[in-house]
Length: 589
Ligand code: HEC
Ligand code: SF4
Ligand code: SF4
Ligand code: SF4
Ligand code: SF4
Image (cartoon, rainbow, N blue to C red; front, top):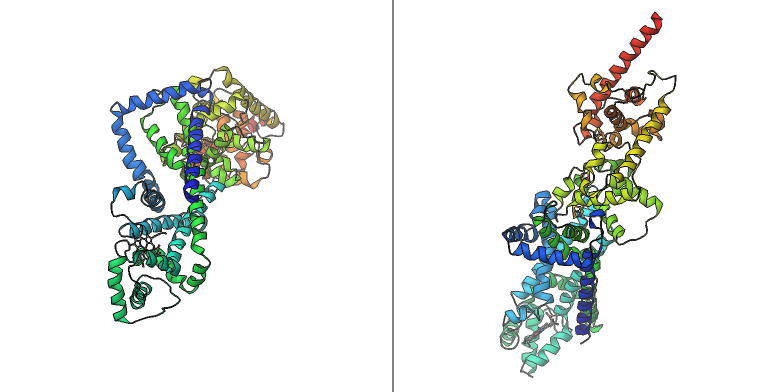
């Protein structure tokens, strides 16, 4: 009775939570494109979109994605076999346990007429699915804490998911073990199902159950009287076998029952199985009730996100549906870290430790951002850096196993930050700047401020470097300069630079200084940008040129294929040449 009430209560809370969470998909806004669309417009657009998709040829895409990516998780398999095994075990095992074991009253019982939880194949399968989940959890713990997959951070939600599943599984298995050994349970059953009162027969049945079925009896210990056991076997066939397969088939529970055998009488008299039952059920109920608010919600949101992304196009889909999808994608993220592993600017995280640079953490931030949690100034700065440190390379989107369109999310959030005047005073290039925004949905006036800021930052640099003791005196922007340094094919690649800062991030010289800007005048990415702007003297005059070790790290890491080191090399040559000319002029004079 208590459990029934608790089950209904937790199911009710689950439903309310589910409705609440799904409603946030229609309420939360990310970016300017989502603004001003009413909830009802978004809801009706979603219904319309779903109906249109189901009634069109796109239904086949949905079916394929459901089988390939949702059921068999092919996207994970492509990335990492161990992770795939882990996920298939946890997800597959848990779903099967849920359907066969937890919902046996609703599903397994009605479907199979002779169902009993103590009968094969159900008993064996329950343990098989259970061991799948436990193996999967073991791999999860191994990956996170022993293998230490790079850039895979563990949040409190990750801990919660691992802990709640572990509690459910372990309590279930120990419960099964305690029940197998329980003498009082055995007596209850005999009372109920055996027809005999005969001392000898009861003794025979008990010996059989002790020897073959794992009951721990205070009366009968090691007993090898074959005849008595075979007599017991017959009685068992008559009274018990209809509902009982050999508990050895419940292999995990049985194995544990052998381990706890010495304390079995104590556990039995203390009614420990009752306590375990409470733990097991309450953990299940709590897990169910809290599911919509936990990481486990992804078991609902991720498939929806995969399916939605499979049939939606940025330019063709309704903006209302894109807004809804983006809000939903935040719930779909499993915090698996694949995107961060592949992110083209994540080297910056390795250097400066700002976790917001990693896409998996940016998503986590976005979640609290859209739910309007307060963020302090320090946090906001770190987040801004994360949002702008992105080369729009799209790798995160390509590898995300739940098909989240991360690139579009970054576009949306960048615009929103931009509108708030929250851009970083990087040496932005118009190239990177425009590439990182949805231009269609932005008023061009909004673009200007950050670009002005960037220009001012450069101008301030010019003044700083424009000192008489420099090797090359500064002149204003030189339009011909760009042509000057394109002697080699490599040097021309400067025009591909979009100021992602990767070259600076990986430069060992930059790393060597506490305040590299002061010591080196310009950082590698800023030199590339100066060349792009034709600021010849700014580029030629910076100390960075002469500090460069020609280590080629920057060039190796440039996602745009800019030959950074070669360009620096050319600039050095250029600067030397200039200096010689100037010296000659001064000697002649
Ligand atoms: C009508 C079906 C049925 C019959 C007949 C039956 N049992 Fe059971 N028995 C069960 C079920 C169902 C459970 C599990 C109850 C639970 O999950 O708490 C169980 C549990 C037990 C347990 C505890 C171990 C466990 O796996 O949960 C013992 C011991 C046991 N039965 C012994 C017997 C004996 C001995 C007989 C024959 C005299 C017998 N049972 C006859 C259905 C039956
Ligand atoms: S965005 Fe995708 S790849 Fe990145 S952590 Fe989330 S689920 Fe994993
Ligand atoms: S698009 Fe940005 S966040 Fe995504 S992988 Fe590329 S650099 Fe990283
Ligand atoms: S040169 Fe390459 S690595 Fe450096 S800022 Fe430009 S694009 Fe990025
Ligand atoms: S080649 Fe020069 S600029 Fe590039 S990483 Fe090495 S030291 Fe830094």
